[in-house]
Image (tube, rainbow, N blue to C red; front, top):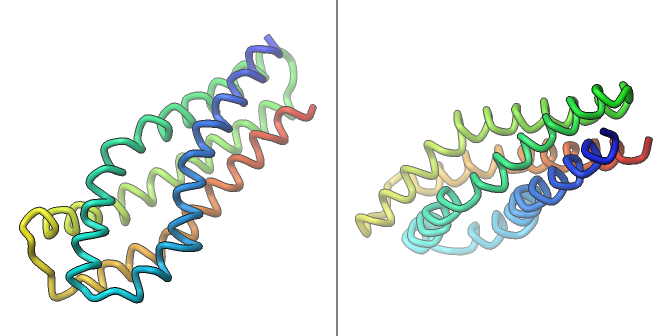
Length: 156
């Protein structure tokens, strides 16, 4: 049972790492790069990025959440309460990330994607991007902490 919980934790690390790396890149690089382009370029670029990200990123995100939950349950079943608690904490961090994404990021993504599809530049494009930028750092922190917690769950 311990081996299964460790394999679940490894799967969660890899899957969550994809989302973490994406959010970290956006926080560290993309925000600054987009601040240097005009609103039309911002809308077209970000709208198209979100089009593909919103289709492709749920798979590793969901897999990471499920694997973190499995790691926690399997560690508990193996009589490893500390490892279970740490993997459970990672699961909770990922759930908070999903809530932030669904409530703040996803609606902005949809608006910018729709504008890009229509070849329009919303008057509030820069404001939408600033609102998105404000949440990407906390999202990256949550993902990073989850990856760290999952790694710690493997140490015990």
